[in-house]
Image (cartoon, rainbow over the protein chains, first blue to last red):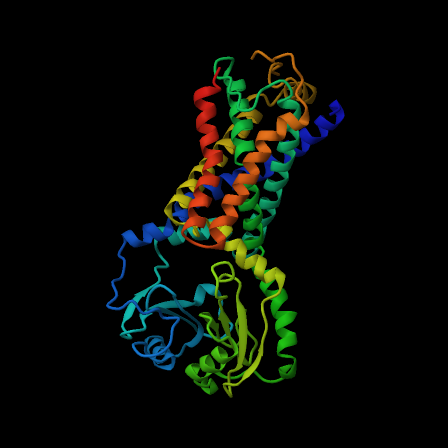
Length: 384
Length: 62
């Protein structure tokens, strides 16, 4: 590699890192407790159930969906249903309500019920510290602009990683893999740690970074689906008035019609008319696939909310599937506690890479660029 | 540092990192495709980058 190209890659690495490091440090630090949010939530009171029935099932032992919806709306008078979500593990059924069919997330209320008894199993804790951390991590309390901004920071992070990998080659030209020179100087020690931790966490950091970017762009991705494919599926309804909440037909009948279209599959959630996940005239029942691999790839069945009849059923397009797969790959919650612990360790590695990078930059800020390039070329032997 | 004078090729420099990256990706995908054995494969494969750092801190310090 010529000195000119090392210089160019060095500048890419430096500037992308400078811009994104503060935000990435925030994301890594807030992400750490979020990895274990299930465990932390469980500590604060795991609900006990009298049954092993799952709320996504059907048949005896489970109350009708219309009954569950009535209970939820009785607790939120004047509000309309927005989502109903199911579990494959326990009888918990979640109902989301809001003041209007297109209510903003901040105005929504999440109610948890036990579908085997109809009892309230809890109300989502919006004031808790975990919720605060999640908001900070998702959008820094700035809504959509905050999400998109963090998405752009994620793109810069991935560019910083890629340029770092390029610089790894000249740096390691005369060094064996894993070299950690701890006694030469503090700067060389941190240079070696920065390089080792960075190259070792590379694949994980790229995957978590890119899936984070996809999640950050969730809103425009869902909007593209709603205006594109969902519009095609409901083309016959174009220009028709929205179905008013007072005219919503039976959810149980809609679910029965939807199940007929996707026999053997479990529903994950129902989106009510007028929200981001349906048309103004339909219940969208999102079904999971029937194998572990396809479980996360959803297929919506659209049911006319006034008549309860099936309009169309189509697997989600690739960009929506990518969004769905990005969630577990970003959260690390799909392989039990050992995977979460590995996730946390790799997150700590990333924090050390970011911190050491910051230290290396701040440490010799007044040095000319040529001296920095020589430091990379010499594997840290010529320190600026 | 017995090979200090030797200039390593890109292939030599990236051989181990590439292996670690491939194992990491296998680990990331494996648990996504199922439970049980596939989770265990995921833990072992994604444990490699962590174990490598442990090895370097013990065996590669100078």
